[in-house]
Amino acid sequence: MSKSKGFTLIELMIVVAIIGIIAAVAYPSYQEQVNKSRRGDCTGALVGLANAMERFYTVNSTYRGAADGGADTGAPAATLFSATCPVDGGTPVYNLTIAQANASQFTLRATPTGAQTGDRCGIFTLTNTGVKNIASAAAGVEWEACW
Image 1 (cartoon, helix red, strand yellow):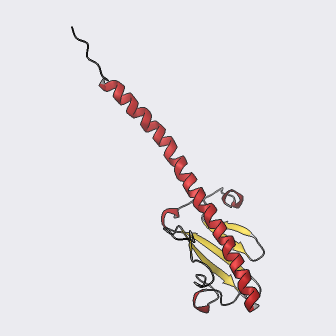
Image 2 (cartoon, one colour; image 1 turned 90 degrees about the horizontal axis):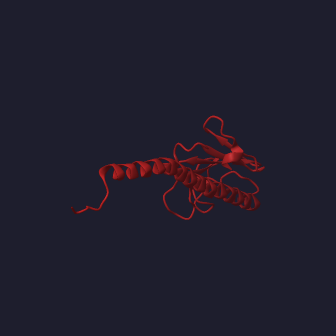
Image 3 (cartoon, rainbow, N blue to C red; image 1 turned 30 degrees about the vertical axis):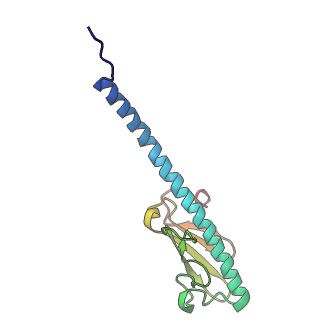
């Protein structure tokens, strides 16, 4: 009598089930790490925009007019800083805007878009005094965990 070699259907189904369980645990963790990486890139870009605002103030003695078209709010002027994050190109995951600017202070905002929409940290804000915050975050999320 010859002995056949190979896997039984049961053995194959057990392997598929184990791979499925591992994937179900690993994929959400992977997605959170990708989101965390995007957040880190964007918070760095937000600080870069704040630096550009300070340079603008040095030249103009006001924060007014730093937005696109010489406005006080909206996307930063193209000559000032990128309006999206990542700033060096690629698919935008955050929109950078000047939420408020007057003669002596400003507030910047990074709003998630595209693949980052629905992120637990929501909208990042940064003021001219360096106050960092988040808005529209999921319940129980502290700004320190996002910045």
